[in-house]
Length: 234
Image 1 (tube, rainbow, N blue to C red):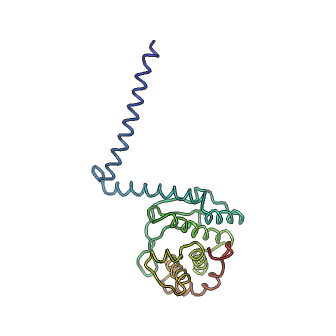
Image 2: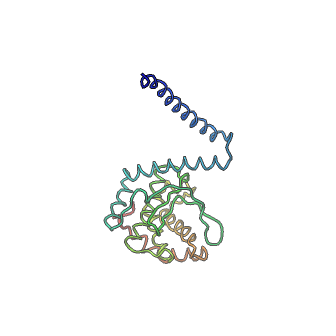
Image 3: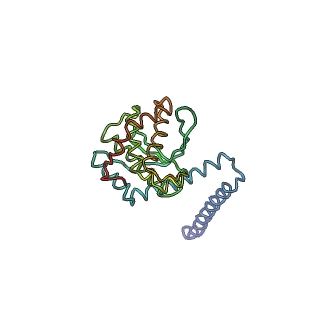
């Protein structure tokens, strides 16, 4: 008798707990959306978590379904370098300092010390942007795997930046339009060169932008022509 009489009470308790939990989640979401009852710092942190989760969802979908990302992951495996899903992760990013002063925004970065790729949650305007960022960093990873890049050597970095910008889709004409650049004359090459200079300028070993430009120009032709592992520019 005692067992049967306790069941309705226990079921009611579970239902109440579930309702309270759902209400608490709703209440917290309203607080973060309206800003009532939370600090601005807490609100920004919550928004960043939402952006990072969205970034993670897009990343997983691209690793499973993007022909470009799948192709690069395959060639990394063929070169002896495995890339677990956990080695590509979304997180908060700060702007990078560049030679000569100032900073530059970025959407991701390759961390050669641990063989990982960091994607900047909240810095993306579309899934295609996430795709080209992953591809860009995977090309850096491919270069590290195949050629043992010394990232403190500006010529090494410049070559990999030229290849990554050229082959990832970063310099498609539609992307340049979004950046407000409408040049038609050798648009792809100009974009690759410009973005490579900015990246080399952010290397702590680079003393100034003039050095970055000189180094990129020195290696540009040979590195731009190297489309491995693709047969041609994607």
